[in-house]
Image 1 (cartoon, one colour):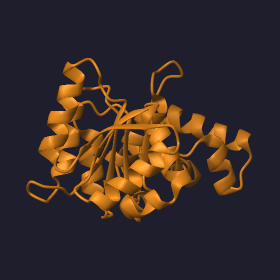
Image 2: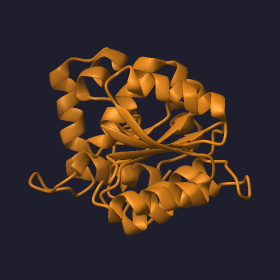
Image 3: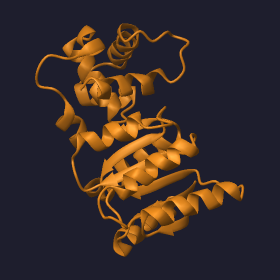
Image 4: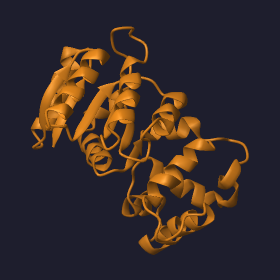
Length: 221
């Protein structure tokens, strides 16, 4: 996979690059600020050498606020098929909602806490899931934004177990992983997932049902 990596920390970029390259991925550009990231991706796309993914920090120069997130949303608006994985040092729901609801938000996005990059297997799984068009939200962020009160909107149609399964889906977990986590059979998880799709009004032949269900979960949490 050809990846553009953006972070203003040389050490963090070096660590992520080492993980990626040691697992057969190619970091084709490294950027130190948000403007450089946007320019690099645009240049590669126009040259017919579009990256397969962008991995970027949220907080970067030039303003050192949420410049990396803004760059990711901007790139997604102009290159709609570009998978983007955003890394952050902060557990914050609003950043995730902006990323998921921004232009081009139809999957292939992820939001991961930086501390999880050191968990190499989880990080690589997130990279693969996002590159394949899925959605991955860090479990800490999922727990942070989950409502303690009554579910809202279409989520009110779901049982407590179905909402729990959907929250695990938002973390990028497969049905098999959800079954292991919740001590359920694979058939039981498949049934819960099918019920989630049905109750959220998603037809069996509808594209990207899993992604759309996750977007609905975030919209009403």
